[in-house]
Amino acid sequence: RSPGLCAIIHYLVRGQLGWLGLTIACVVPGYAAQFLSILWFRADGHPPGCWLLVLHLLQLGLWKRYWDVLWMAAKTGGSDCAGEVLTQHGDVSVLQLLEALLQTLPHLLLQAYIVVAVEPAGFIPGVSAGLSLLSLAWALVSYSHFSCLLKPGHLCPPAAAILCLLLWRTGMLGTRVLALVLFTRLYSFWVFAVAGVHWLLMAFWLVAQQTDIVAQPCRWRLFNCVVGAVYIFCYINVRPGPSKHRVAVFYAVS
Image (cartoon, rainbow, N blue to C red; front, side, top):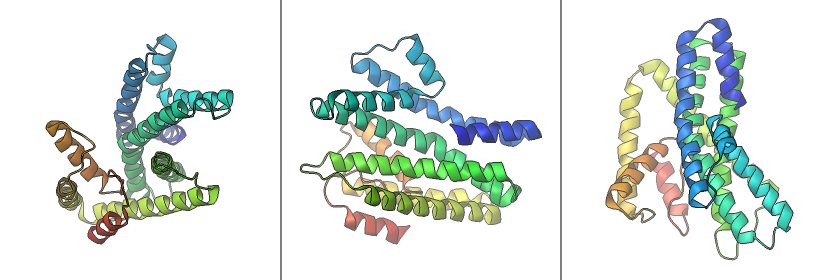
């Protein structure tokens, strides 16, 4: 939470109410992940009490889930309840990715634009953008790590592999965000046309792949539209099996 909080305090102290309002607005979509976390607690047979609701209101619900995973793994020695630990790890990985895409990514775009086009010497916006970039990259790495754990006969990737994956995600996201920000500075609202064309291409590509992760037709269409928007910034594998050909197509188009 430090990147957003530091930026909010920075704009409040300097009286930049416009940027302050936009920075606060970037926080609001993150409550979707907190709300979904509460629903999952209830579905798992743990009705949320007042303390748990307060944590989610403060956007600390995912930290509570991380604590539960670590506590259960330490308590059982990582063997007796391995299946339950993996399930909870999967829940928090998906929720963290959702929060990163809904909250951290807009915050990153906003702070990056401020640094490039408005306040090039701004230290706090630059630090906030950098931390947001690392947070988003780590959310993607955590999701990829969980996807590997689901595969039969999986091998836990070493720390070096995770570090390389984090560097790759950080570089990929950083270059895309910088390109969009520079394009916005030069051509203003035309960036929405470019992003819209890319989104349509990716959405139709997902439809052509016949992804069956969502069964209901309406939710399936919504899923393809949402993931198509995510593909403007990064690739997420939503189908089982080898993905090298899909990744090659994605980078060729992008």
